[in-house]
Length: 175
Ligand code: SF4
Image (cartoon, rainbow, N blue to C red; front, side):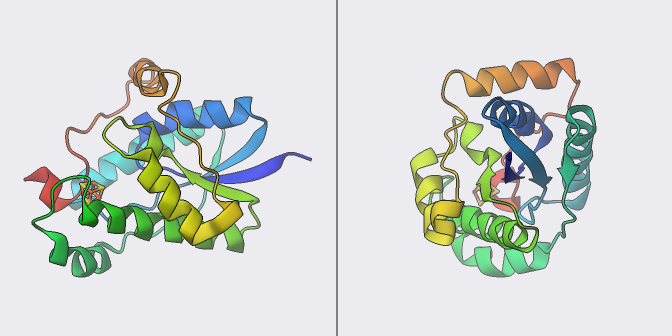
């Protein structure tokens, strides 16, 4: 029987290649767009729509999600001065992966993982450390940026004419 993996999705662009890659590895894929870091709401909405388009074209189901931006801000305002890649980002990855772990457990997925590792701006080793800490063996430590993953996902996203953002997501990265 195919193993089920819940893919935490940060945006449509990053999702395209990751879904394809997981399917090549014989996983049944479900998606979760849980990103309370994204500010402001219109930006969140644009990214969500792009993810819905990818889900539709690739035929994956998206799990219901929420947008607790005030909870995110409450936790992360303490890290406002951090540089990208620092403590604020570690906490931001943790919050999103924690939700993916919860949904994966509730919906009987065998594993969970994240599109975050496809970006060359994200430290995959740090994401693996956090994912393993949260989910142990349930976290699939896949480095999607390997084998030109980022280049491939950009190409596929261009074909689908997906919205492409120009900042990571939070109010601090927007500044
Ligand atoms: S820069 Fe990106 S990863 Fe870091 S806290 Fe902001 S949204 Fe999260």
